[in-house]
Length: 243
Image (cartoon, rainbow, N blue to C red):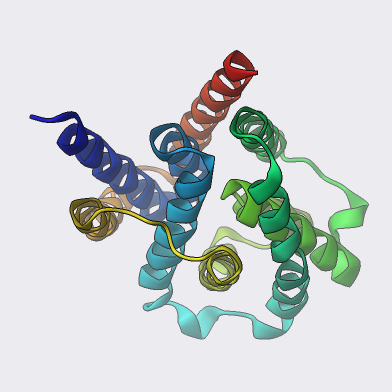
């Protein structure tokens, strides 16, 4: 087996894992997969593939729950994200790879810890909170591939239930990742890599849905966050090593 084939299989496995946890817990594709994809492909292509795959798995989940989307509540988040996505793309294109790895590692790790701690902040409530969360999320999504935590913190402070959060997060995921890809372009992958990524998304959606019926929600979220924290710290370590 050549190293290219092994790398493609590993890429497909990372996408499958990310898609599985996203379908299982309603969040987590980018948190789990983005750090690993960055380590495999480099900051630029890794974040692009994370954007592409996260948008696709969000669309799969949204197909069955689009009627539950609260468009009025999501509008400030989406508008704010659209305004900051170009800034994130501009910054990511100009930073040296080790610096970008450090930045991605710090953003992922800090975001996970904030979500795990259940951070409450008056600034994240109401229309101003939605605009702040959307702006932070758009920048983080296009620069580091991880826009979900800011939206999770907003939903937590707004008092949304999990049932309310999941379809709205999927709707937001489709749009913010589309914005990010429009700003930066599609990832440049080989045909086998694209095929394995697509298979990973499809298989992960099926596996995650099956697991969701067996794994308690709280435990699923804890697994997602633990995997994400490990990936963020690993990416941070690699970036620091390269400085």
